[in-house]
Structure formats: structure tokens, C-alpha cells
Image 1 (cartoon, protein in one colour):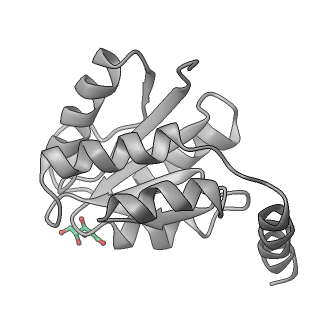
Image 2 (tube, helix red, strand yellow; image 1 turned 90 degrees about the vertical axis):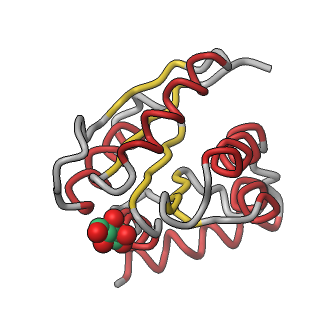
Length: 150
Ligand code: RB5
């Protein structure tokens, strides 16, 4: 399977996990686009949610992984951006199905929730699944309408 460019971003709480994932992604053959942060110094997660999502919206990356303490703040912020469908996952079934059924383009992880091993399994599940289209495309289209109208 062709490897896709993947953006990663985090706040301070997700920094160590982002660095871990960057290394794993590179070893697995993905092109990694790092949108920060670049240290464990305290910072604001919406800034990095935007920076990571921007890489997808600008076409530099096909998908993005965002890490913060819970993954929740990142997903809330990311979903405010038009064209972004982000979900916070801590089980591999959901991490796979957000691609298959929801065409999610951003996976959010909680570094204080999942360990490194599970985080990598979540990333792999997300990155290797493909959107199924069909009736799911209609539903994703309805989400886009919600975004346009609200
Ligand atoms: C930072 O302490 C923490 O609030 C942040 O990483 C994230 O969990 C927010 O949702």
C-alpha cells in the first residue's frame, strides 16, 4: 500500500507522544509533517490543532494526528475548522471506523489516556483504513451541510 503524508501536532501534554509517533511513522515509511509544538513547555492546544489541521486543508498531508492530554480539547478545536472531521479515540475499532464510515481526516489521542503501544495501534488502524463511500458518503455530505449552514 502506498504510504501517505501524515501531519502530527500536539500541545505540551501530548508532546512526548507526538515525538514517539513521529519516529514510528517514519520507520513505517510515512512522510511526517510536524506542525509543532517543539518542546514540553506549556502552550495552548487550539493553536496546534489549527496548525495540524491546516496541513491537511492545504494538501501538505492527507491525514493528521493530534495529541493533547485527553485528546478531547484537540478534537473540539479541530472540528471548528471547515473540512475537518476529527475524532478522539482510545479503541482500535473506533479508530478504524472513523475512516471507513466517517471519512475522518484527523485522529485525536490523549497522551494521559493511552500508552505508547496503544497509541501506535490506534494510529495504524486509522491510517490503513479507507473510506467506504456509498451511503456513508451521503451522511458525510450531510455533515458538510451542517458545517455550511451553522
Ligand atoms: C493541558 O493540561 C490539557 O488541558 C490539554 O492537553 C488537553 O487535555 C485539553 O483538552
